[in-house]
Length: 101
Image (tube, rainbow, N blue to C red; front, side, top):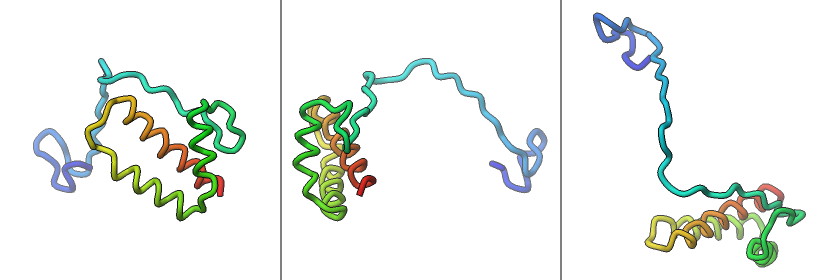
């Protein structure tokens, strides 16, 4: 429906649906491991994640959201790739913790 009712004469009639086929040739960037850490059972969590979960577990939903907001505010800043990855992982863990409340 990209061209609305009037279309794009003479090739695309009004109300037509456009379908694009895209081939992904390469993906920029490094592989990022999937987050398999279960915030309740700690299964699949490394020591750093377990320590972070323990520290944050005393907070209620509002406190967890406040920490998510703080961490999101740090995104986009200049930092080493491994620190940026840990920042993203902490946000993911906090979101999982909020979902469990």
